[in-house]
Image (cartoon, rainbow over the protein chains, first blue to last red):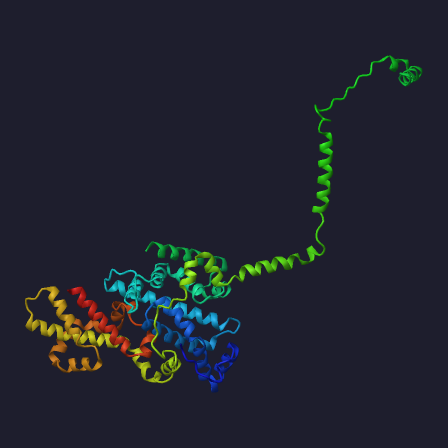
Length: 190
Length: 247
């Protein structure tokens, strides 16, 4: 569905990409390659949290702008991949909490703005299971929603997820089981 | 019996006393002790046999035990996400492939270019702006104040507080850009400005302003640095909210 550009940096591993970034002569090339390598994964992670493309685009661009500065201090003992996921997660949560604040200022009663965003998607169809699933996911508490998305869609091992969300593997596993059961109930009863 | 007699005689020779005593068995045994004695013996022999077998361990068992346990733990952990969800909820497993969200075509193709463009150029142009951001609010407030008070004093003598607020809000919405503020200031005569500042001079005190401005809802500094429209959007938002509240 999406084209990827054929270039020299395509097959480099994270350490090689970071080395490119750290050399002033190839800094931009390294950074571009890091974006290209992770943009789709991170985009979908963010999109599932903030729902609309416009919001996901904002959050994704902002996060990479922060990454540009923060990469200077990136310590290589942590994994680039989980580090980026952690930033994307934090940025998404910050974005959502800012939105909640704005909603309360404008005296809106709509507490679950994300469900409404789903419903206003041009493809939304309340009779279709896949949309019911999305509504069910939005009915979860924020943290559980993150765990569910990371496991269900990103298929992230619990060990890596524990670095992204700074939670123990056992707690994550329990949280995922809980979330999946809740979602199943929601779909069956709605 | 001859044998019996022989034994009795023998005892009589050794100890006449003992020979004259009746032979009584002083020991008791459980009732029916012997009735299932053979079965008991056979069971014991059978169990003994089994026990020996139980105690036998396959050769090398303990050498490989730790490895076996570890590999079992690993295989439990390496349950793939799709196996896992299939076990929890088969419905969710099959739903997963359904795509719901659209992405604009070619969105990912030039994303990195757009991000780099935002990172690279105009930093120097914007720095002074962000450090003076409160000035813009202050300037807008002062101009609105002057215009509102002087014009309302002339045209709106009998207005009640609600319509006055509304009128001020409407006036305020005209002064969003520096150009509009400049134009507003230019339209005032000196006397009006002096009168206003005499009455409301303290508003120019920076501390007072920063105390009275709720900065929590302001767009973040990062947003300013990247996009000047952010502030305009923010001002539009406040105006819309303010209008909503007064309606």
